[in-house]
Image (tube, rainbow, N blue to C red; front, side, top):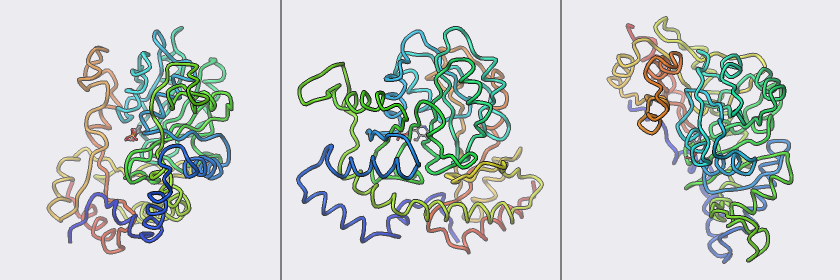
Length: 365
Ligand SMILES: Cc1ncc(COP(=O)(O)O)c(C=O)c1O
């Protein structure tokens, strides 16, 4: 049996006729940018989250960049991140002219409030937490720290559509939540897309103008903006998928529950499940000191895996200028050397899940 690492077209096939009908309707509408599909998605996504105003943009990276910029982060500022995040989180900070400050996460993949507190300087403007792998960060420590230090709090929710902490959805904890709709995400489009969600109505208005050349009203440009709009075709297709997101997340949760129950190999560490956190399991990531051997063992049984992510941003060429060598973030580096993402996708069969379980459990270590 061959088990792929992912299968985005299986999500399409699940509701194929609805997507096809929507695509044809948008094509025939004659309205392709900033029309009713985008407005309806923005309303629908806020309703799904249970609060905030949604501004649709062209990608997750743009969502992060626009949120940081409009909230006032710029040259001379520092933004605190966790060292195991995807590099796009840091790129957004750099695009604003600010400096990403990487902090060591804890071994459960979460941003560490203790390490964040130690990284605060007079130049710190914001804390940007990533709910990596669709695993919800315990938010109590970070929200109180940001409030007491007078810092902006932003969430990178690119992998966390529908996660909750103590019942409240990811994206609503701070000044802005930033989402990606890259095709493989839990709420993935059929191309690029993203959104910022904020409870600050004035900021939302400015983001809406900024994404559209800084134009509040046609041909009235209050500031130097960008072109970063969620297009009508993607918004229409996202409207269809949003209607199914709870079931899609439930499928991912079902796969994770089987893995958590059935994986049983002392050489493999399972992801930590935290009381109060509801995960959407964008990825199911295990750890092993013998990760590369485990990966080869699985490949030998036809099981594809992935590594999210093999090089932490601070060790990438892009951030070499920060001068953070190997050893500067020991936990982030250890995670990069030991994490392995098991297949976990909508459309995965029970037999495929069993094949992964058997293969992992038979790994000699
Ligand atoms: C954690 C994280 N942040 C940001 C991004 C960037 O999103 P996009 O690819 O839509 O620009 C991604 C996805 O690629 C991501 O996983």
